[in-house]
Length: 294
Image (cartoon, rainbow, N blue to C red; front, side, top):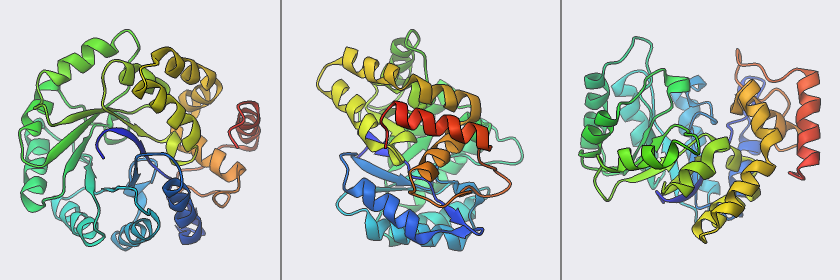
């Protein structure tokens, strides 16, 4: 569950409400795919924009449609009390684990973040993924903080931000040196996934896999079978997609891909986050066809 490929689906909206039918279909589609786990209410799932009631319903729908796939639930929120309510929802849905990001308005200190993880791990028996996503939370974990948090009971995995091919081996070794053996290291940032996996990361926490599982599975399986060149080649083949990610951000591009494929309604992101304009949607559609991503 905390190794291999974890797919992060969108939480599509229609008329400013969760589109339950399309969300359920996305999760069901992943349940029928070769991804190894399904993680809802991550950054791709727009968790920060949803009310507690919407989040509870999303978790219920995910549990009902995930089949035999392990279900991981994002629980991050501004206040610790809200995080713990989200943890209860995950427990009620028999989730296999939770994903915790330090969400903030006021700048958090390392002691604040350590205290958050201490409070959460003390309150649940569910295993916890440390979700380091400075692009959305605006908090950067130090390597030393990874080590302090990883000593807490229940910490199962640490998701590190993307790394370059050149920096990946030393970065993974640096993190590995401060965390216990049972804590896995996962990579995010789809364009750099193969770099982290080839350098020894145990897991890939993937936005693209939530909508396009097949190419992500090919990369993951190539690494697992000891074919790093094949993984790198597939990553390179997807370069037009990664260029769009770099230009517009992954969630806007993934939403446009899902909308183009008819998997979700048009304008599925929560306002004020707007999707791509007409010209960029045409570019996305061209990349989908060029790379045979349908």
